[in-house]
Image 1: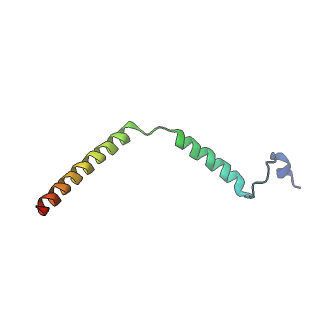
Image 2: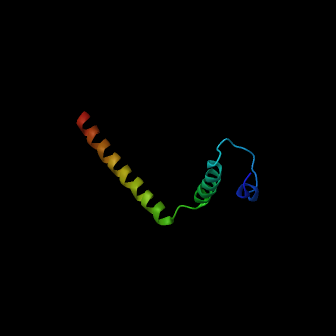
Length: 69
């Protein structure tokens, strides 16, 4: 056993070997990002997109209905 391995606390083996530390750090980072709220300006943009798509869908349905008469 070398000096570095004795300094690091042992965790139960999860099958990932040296990638285990990376996985723990990534889970912590992704968890923090997931807990962040969505900025209001982004929500506003998404709402405008939904409205625009609804108008376009309504316009295309109006054209298809006229063609069927």
